[in-house]
Length: 221
Image (cartoon, rainbow, N blue to C red; front, side, top):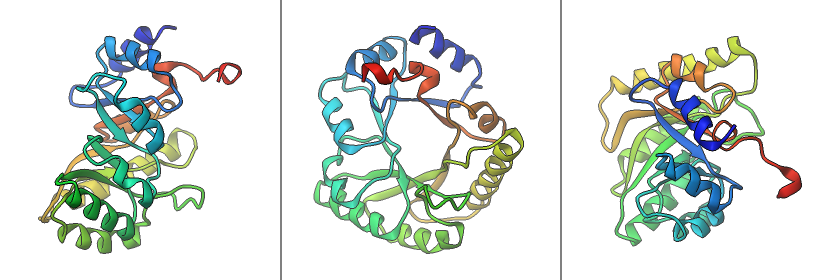
């Protein structure tokens, strides 16, 4: 299927109010332009260097999302270039984002990434450390928290829905509280193989790569 057909197929499964992020990591400029021409404006990258390399070669109305693990020594390169950081997962990273964005005279919009399955192979803050991070976020002047993000463990429909439901409950509980610099507007969860479940469980932002661009051709890398 073509990129246009893929985009139409995904969008047909998304209710109004759900944002589709086309995950463009490893994808060439030509394919990103193709998706752009079919109306996609939100693109997700995993690596800072790749995002920065693409930034100046593509239209400036693209909203770039940093969805991969963000190393503290790379934060300075994305100040003013990223619409939303999805992967805030520690106080140390928060401190660096606050410092670099303050230096650059910019305000960062970010999501707190929760490691809901406590997988050692994945980044994200554990639930028991969330309150500490929230308190630190309230002290920031250059970081605004817009919601939560999760990458759930691989599993069947039942386990996917269980983790998505847990995330929605955390999101809703935080939404009922009053914070400084923190709003619960965005719940970013769901990827190519599970985004339908995620949306049904309350996600309003999905990150779809293969479902938009097709399977990666490793022979043509």
